[in-house]
Image 1 (cartoon, helix red, strand yellow):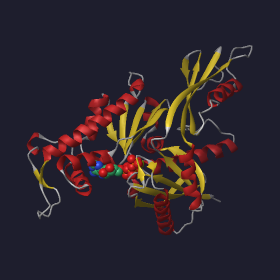
Image 2 (cartoon, rainbow, N blue to C red):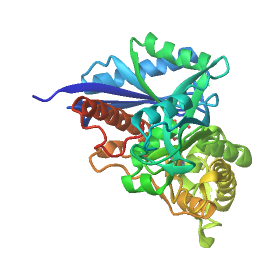
Image 3 (spheres, helix red, strand yellow):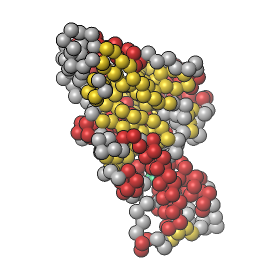
Image 4 (spheres, protein in one colour):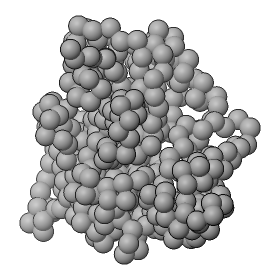
Length: 398
Ligand SMILES: Nc1ncnc2c1ncn2[C@@H]1O[C@H](COP(=O)(O)OP(=O)(O)OP(=O)(O)O)[C@@H](O)[C@H]1O
Ligand SMILES: [Mg+2]
């Protein structure tokens, strides 16, 4: 008989609180039951919660709506996390190989891993995730070290940490909503999980989720997350630039951005005139396509150049081979062409697995979808552990 478990995912995005509820059947197949989103209305900025009571209210609304749409009650929730307080660093742990034959034993690997993970943070900070990036045998990169000859093994970890008080705040919101935390994952890593194929993960890929307040990114190479982070710039900055530059309200600037903020403007389109509001009444005004293009272009170039700096160590020939964009702002027309020029790599928008329902195959939902997939992989790993088949699953990150 098949067993099913209900899982729920939450993203506190700068523009929307998003919730997805799914059923995990036999620990391996996901059926999405419902989704819901509620406008954040300034309660979250650049991924940081700035108004706790409002965020609590929005969270409750989004969860209740998803529960009633799916006729289901949830008890736990997993969270995609972002925010300016989050920091990431890499850490190496070492162990000498002491076996007489000089071959690496599983115990050596464990000692190197423990050494890498034990680094203590300054007070007021807590680890969110510790992710294995792979190993070095006598300085040479290696994915599966057991049984290989070496005198020393280094384990490399990506250490992700955040401010205690902020994490406590999040935990309190979840608990006040009558729920328990299940899991927590960095938003950029979640988006990367949602849209990359096994080949991309092996060859090397940068996934950048350009949301409203921030750009969450992750680089994956040899099947491992090797770099991740947050750039505190997103689509809202483009909207604000349009509002300031063309003297429009934030609401009008947002709709101008969506309707005519394309980056790949042709020469013959430059002099095209739009009406900002569209009713041609008092208060409406004419705007030139070229003016919008110049504003959007300069902000998006700035964002992509900051991102390039963040991942520069992986832009060598054996680093990342392509760029994938997700998040609502990935819908900006022509953004992939611009990213291709800036990163000198092919660039495309995120492609979702064919099994995912059509209504969820949206760039702005990549993060919660990635959290679902992360939980599916975690549960599959657990059940494989139980049946003693560890090592046969592909695409495992953690
Ligand atoms: N067609 C489009 N063209 C340009 N920008 C768009 C388009 N559609 C949505 N956006 C932008 O995408 C952003 C919202 O994306 P998303 O839902 O991924 O953000 P979020 O998850 O709420 O925020 P964050 O992850 O930054 O906290 C907004 O800035 C919105 O203007
Ligand atoms: Mg987001």
